[in-house]
Length: 137
Image (cartoon, rainbow, N blue to C red):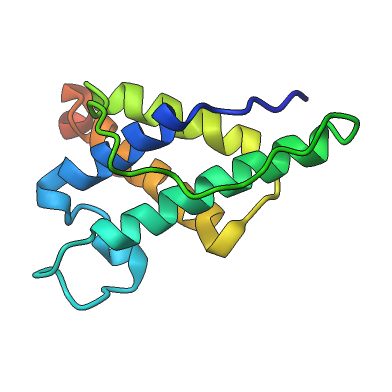
């Protein structure tokens, strides 16, 4: 298995997409309801995306131990990028990143990432017409 080292822009796109979904509150419950939904989730999303990036760099460094270790610095959130244009693209990006993280779990980011992947998957599936007409059992 190879490990891809993702560019900062991918992480910024993940952050921007999380930040705009349903007013930034879409994933608040995954962060143990910090201060409630009335407050901005930006700092939690930034910390989560930073942890994803650190996990990606660590997984890359571990996989390719003969390469020079890459330094880990904080992500510059002042650099604005466009969010993903569709939930499908967002999901594919998250799943690709999850595959590359292996067992790296910085600050619990892998578990939260798994939950976000599940929620985005359900959002996509629930919009398919067959979902409404399918029997539950």
